[in-house]
Image 1 (cartoon, rainbow, N blue to C red):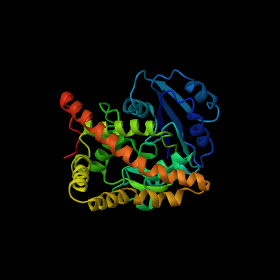
Image 2 (cartoon, rainbow, N blue to C red; image 1 turned 45 degrees about the vertical axis):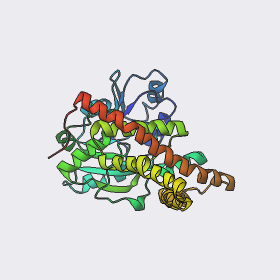
Image 3 (cartoon, rainbow, N blue to C red; image 1 turned 60 degrees about the vertical axis):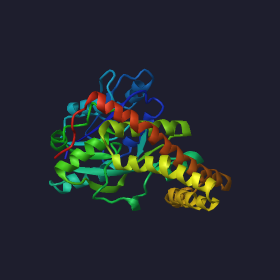
Image 4 (tube, helix red, strand yellow; image 1 turned 90 degrees about the horizontal axis):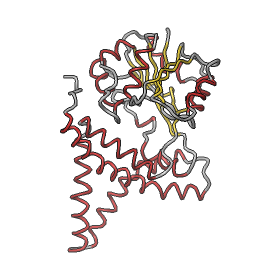
Length: 324
């Protein structure tokens, strides 16, 4: 079974070395690696060239390509019927590719495989970030899990039937592709041991920007309307109502606020207890303090980001991507 591994890069000189190094020690090497460069101006290409004798690398350049355009271009350039996808900025377990493609080799009815991803945290803030925003393996429903394109594989013909990655969308593009793919071919086969490690955002400002853009992508694609409406109801209606009731009637109304806050952080704190090994006692306290701030910042970023996406959608009338 011949396999192409594809990825896109843009100014990844600081992060791509870890990915390429992890590819050199894979228990099953890809038969080719196709990299689409969107026009890097740093040392990305020089780092890739260093690995030209150790990996079957080929680079194509598409100046100004967004991530969907880059992935689609790399897949068009790929030679083989099985395609694995990852991203610059990750580090792959040695058995990642072997585990990821195994279901495709074992059963011709399997069209797509979802790998998993884990945070590669370096600081207490990043540990808190991973615990707050990323599910643990035990929380995953394999039938409903939609993979990140940092850890996914599929048959090329199935990818083409799904229409490829949506080139009109700059964020949440892998979710739109996943939904179309699953509607046509059924659920992805979930392989939790095919793990890609990636570093969470390292500051609250970077996290805010990330979740603002994710929410804007949701608005552009018309994704998760109910979730966003519930968030608006909670923050813009219920929260003011509780605060006003506490001022006008009784401070006991603040108990509702405390209960709501505890519910918001209960799962992140449970994950944190599993993930903070290696931190000192002081660092654990720092991580504990960051969790509610990260949770709040993420919600506020989504509240701010969704309306601009909806406005963009009305102005540009993107294609209806749903499979009916």
